[in-house]
Structure formats: structure tokens, C-alpha cells
Image 1 (cartoon, rainbow, N blue to C red):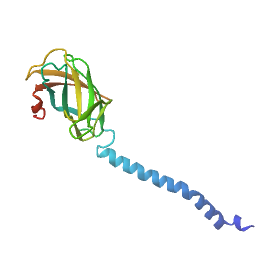
Image 2: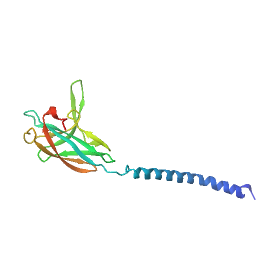
Image 3: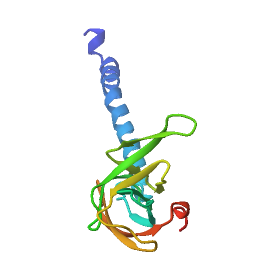
Image 4: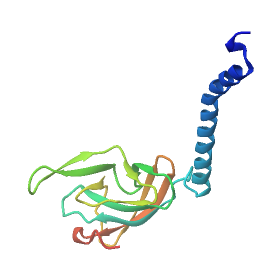
Length: 173
């Protein structure tokens, strides 16, 4: 009988052939244990949980046909979401926009498709960064409440009211 046919040699060949399969099985078991712990901790598949914690519309100066609305949106869920549109039954067109500096005292506004609300975080809009540009259908009054619908990619729509404030008071909560 040849050396390859001996029982010891066959055992060595079988063990070396099984080593990759055993390594793959152990790696899979380790990954499954890690995912199970992640899921048990509430981190996996946790949907976004959104709420608007502040909403303001800036009172425009006389003669302006548009103004800015700003929102603070809190996400207590384990997954991020994206704000993809804003509308209002009492306003005209509403567009997400961002101001970017182009000089020492100048900025350029550009439209953006969406804004991310991070998991366990907050999206804070400002009149000097990300905001919502809205066209006015009628003049606004200081203290007026304006209804808005914020539409998110995963969480769907959220309705809120924004308070009309002087531009200097946009940050008050």
C-alpha cells in the first residue's frame, strides 16, 4: 500500500480539507453572535422616530414675495432619515435651500434635494445655512401660525405649525 493510502495520511488529508469549512463556520457564528447582540441592544432595524422641536417662518420685509422657514427636527430612532420635501397649504412653492459663503460678507443660495436627520440626532436649520424658501401667497402677520407638511424618505409625512417671527428672533424656542 502506498503512503497516501495509510490511515494517518488519509486523516491528515481530511483535516486539511475541512479547515477552510471550519474557519468559515466559526466566522459565520461570530458574525451571527455580533448581529444578535446588536439587534438585542435595539440598534438594528430601528426606524427613525422624528418630531419637530422648533418651527419658525421669518417675517419678510415689506414687498418681499418670499421668505425662509426653519425647523429643528429631532430623531430619537436608530436609523437616519432624509427630509425630501416641504409644503404648506397656505404658502406657495417651498424648496429646501442652502446658503454657502462666497466671500467675506456674501453667500450664494442653492437648492438641495434632501437633508439628513441623523439617527439619535438633530437636524437644525438656520437662515444662514439650510432652510426652506417659501413663496408667499398673502402677507404674513407677526405671531401667525403657518401649517407645514414635512415629507421624509422613510418616516412619511409630519405636520407641524411654524410661528411667524421677526428675523432676529428665528432662534427662540
